[in-house]
Image (tube, rainbow, N blue to C red; front, side, top):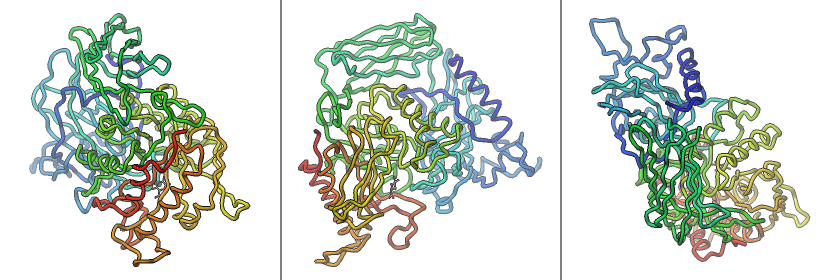
Length: 620
Ligand code: GCB
């Protein structure tokens, strides 16, 4: 039923997985647009077992157990002694990272077992999947004691087919999620964010017909402004199956035929299209129906249509030069802290971005919850979406490259129908080595191959030299720039280097004739920490000093002719294990313009003014 290649990979993985509890490249189907399909939510309370020694999988000689916790055996006081009992175990909420649900789990890194019962009676001629919005970082899933899938990568969705293992009525799922940091992971051992573990996004049961629409891409043609084009993939459909695509509001309808790869190429002429933009975030209802047998499959989406391109150093949205007035955002939950997952979290974060005067957000440093990109579509915020190729990955390790590729593919597949996303980012602040450049060039090529309609970027480090005027010159010549459509650069003048005033004597030497986004800049301030009135040299960590950084940076940025966007670091303070200065950081990175408790710092208003009055940056 699944594509032959998927089936083979899946089979190989399941064999591998029964012989070792080791991270493996995922298999799994990825059904797009799951939030528009009928589904049964499995959110709520799950029984959990904290299993620091992975006792649920390994015996005392580190051999894989046949009677592991995945058996979910009922506890019998007169039977064989048993070290676990899900029925009596305490619970954690799903979705939700485990770290912020119990004080003793705040710093926990390791495996935790989750269990819950569910009722299901499958309808005839259907497939049933367990859908996971994301689980950090490695996940192994069993249903009714049978292993159904595994997945590596903490921020992208996956689906496990469970059709052959479920029974009518009562069933149970057991899974192990392990957030142990690993050197050959993506990300790797070092990050500047909290390693929140667990089922931090929605979990649901999804039932689809025997043959079903699992993937599609519908976008506006760059060369023909009156043409929506793309494809619809119908899993399991044989060649000749008819697919129809309908945009009722435009009175536009077309039919296409699925080829031997179960894919139909779609071209849909449209008239009087209202183009998506920050000023006009118009979304159209789109209906897709596949005349599959024995039952048809249909799905609806809301899609915006626009083009995004570069011309020299310009970024063109719908053919018009645009300047990206942005802010970087971590998926940190406002007020309660922890990993953001709810519509309320998203509304707060993106509401603040709108209040700041943004038309663009950089979603750092991994794909955020799908609610974020859906809401950006509705609010008219352009998005930079990134995979966690962060800092010093093992760039010479092909297994790591395979993990990056998987995460990039999953990110693009989930979000390729979101008009808001204009930039795919393949990396952040990676070391300039040959191995790195080769690795990331492969990633850029893959992004282009998977999606030829968007721009590919990465946040680069820059070189610094003294200049004859007594200041410094920032040189942007990282060889990765050759492969990118848009250059992103991070710099922290006024924080990690020099005083805020250093920006006044900094010049920029950009060796690429491409648009540049200053993807990070800024500095820390603890909300409420103020310099004495009239202090002309405010100390670090005060709101006044952070504000000073913003003043000087804005003046400097305005002197960079090819600057086409900026996303300072960052909207809101976030938890980070690296930030251990007591009283100031307390395990938080304080570079937010807003504190984790929602207090706006002085710098917020400086950037807001510059964005609202459009005194920062030029589109051309
Ligand atoms: C960076 C990183 C970002 C950090 C930030 C900082 O360059 O890209 O993830 O959090 O600096 O605060 O140091």
